[in-house]
Image 1 (tube, rainbow, N blue to C red):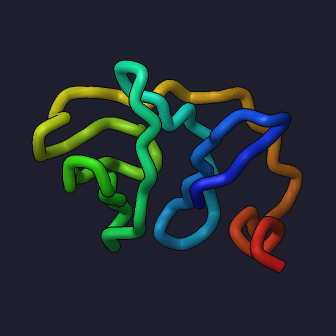
Image 2 (cartoon, one colour):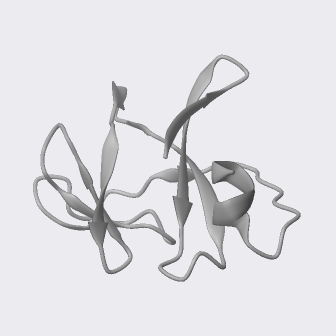
Image 3 (cartoon, rainbow, N blue to C red):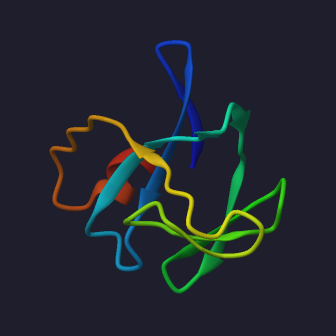
Length: 87
């Protein structure tokens, strides 16, 4: 989920089963990336079409292969983090 928190862009991702959530900084080399769900625990950035892992934030293939999103501090107090954010 491309979001904003405290006036800053953040990316919130979820494990396939919704049991884990991660928060990343969507800036890579000064460029703000927007992401869409690609399925199977992956996401795609709209700028390059590169494929990223939703839990590690690592780019697995594409123009940005090897890049990693910076993890942001997070605290999710829910047994189902996806449901907590989307309801």
